[in-house]
Image (cartoon, rainbow, N blue to C red):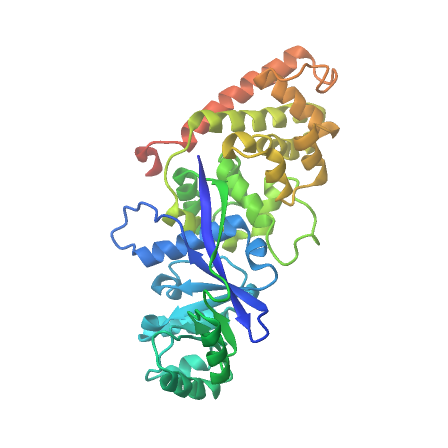
Length: 413
């Protein structure tokens, strides 16, 4: 099942009117949840992080910092932050700094390397403690008069924090608040929020639940995690997206298999990702499209095993990526270009080049009747063994699809 990742970002400017960061803003629809304790703010935070991660942290940040609102469940750790600490400013809203649990959460985030901003700031008893941790103070200039703002700026200035004027709506106001001493500015006069969207795949809740159980088990197996991800095209795609993120992008080896992507992502980061998706994702996928994708991936794997077993995992990933146009409804070129997959996989998926391309061509002929055997591997496979592999792949794809889209009773096993 495909859906749309959707959010907005609003720039934050310095005194020279240069962008220093972007605040991410929720613009989608809240997911339907059966949890009676889930609050809209918590779900908005979780959905925002999922959408931002899908759209790409590097793409959204553009080398700047991302400012993200923290609701109570982020502060107490129930909603994980999946952005890199060095690129993230956590905005703590004023009502959430008034109890011990929330303050402890702010300390934990700061210790983890996240930059802290106090949003909608009003002076309160105990503000000193948090100002020692904070790098930014955001003040709503529409909620306070000039004298009150000036007094607040004077008090917070002693802590060396940068002050941000929120909701600046005219050039006269920008000049006035610059004169008052603000360091940074955010508001419609400078830039309205920019909406960013992209189609994406929705992982099965069955996969999420089974992965959550495996990742929470102290004896959890990496091999079992790989097996679970292999049979959910949507989750596999998101793992590839996640592995393509990070400050070292372009400096490390390309992904050749889902195993590579999972190693790059890491156990802890995968745990956080699964928790977020359990909170926000719907529970349905289109079985025919999933079955087609899994069958193609498995067929490529089986065909590759006959040539060179060392190619099998890369062939599986090639077949899976070659199905993304079917699952996402967008050209496969745009999907592959956004991922750090190995060059031989990219050329195979886009142009049917190389050994992996010949295997994919054979698989597409067997599955879809596209091309001819001569156009594909050029006689690499005899007809009987190729057709036997196709039958095995179809049975496996159907079986995995039924397991992936299991009923509610299956989820509880």
